[in-house]
Image (cartoon, rainbow, N blue to C red; front, side, top):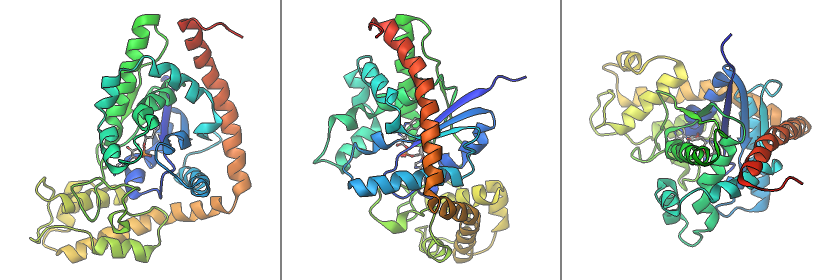
Length: 331
Ligand code: TYM
């Protein structure tokens, strides 16, 4: 029998969950979990690196958890918990901070981007965010980390920290691998297709929320920014159309080539409508499950409480091992 893999991934409750989050990451979580045991976290501690209204953070944490379940992760076989419920994440993050170089963190493009976006709040948490992410992953002997392409640099840093630590103390951490989808690892904004689709984008026309209604989804796709010629092809010079082709292919399960030939000779208007319909119809079952989970808060609480209990036990094993290695006295 093949070895069971441990899969870890996280998502910030920092806004509405977009089609980008779904296609690049969350959609793949139940699929990758088939390879073994999935551990999925709503990473609220990451989300406080930018300012939030407490009531909003609470509401988004719960709705993010509901989205993970609605996307098909089976909580009977996997863990779905809230990061702040498992203290070992913060404890290991502190230790890893002492094995991470200032220069390494300064090179992170997300830090540079977010420092520009939040110039009045460039806090230390924003800077050390990748060490917390490394702790999330390394605590569980993770083999695979299903993420979109924007997390590749953070993942590479997590690997480097683990290799550095193992170089000093022996084989403590397993070195994780990224699991990045071939298609859809970077879904672009609908209004500026040179930027990634992001839940923190102030322009709501730029993203699709995965719990959005059909009419609104179709309207947004109809107004998606493309180019001025009318040829449907996949190319670097046509980022808007290429993005729509990617989205259409993932949501309908065809290849990009099949999508291109399906729309050969047809106009942008017809194509955009078809993409909107494919997305709205593809998301409908998820939306219904999401509504169901949001009306069953007791069930959500049961899942995140039981998962956190198990995650606490698993993570403390690794934390204790690390503490022993570095010379902390066992209490
Ligand atoms: P976050 O919350 O920004 O995004 C969650 C997941 O969605 C992916 N993603 C995208 N994929 C394709 N196209 C897009 N436009 C797009 N936007 C976002 C992200 O790559 C991510 O996989 N730091 C992480 C959360 C995190 C984490 C972890 C992930 C914390 N600890 C440990 C993996 C392992 C983040 O901010 O993701």
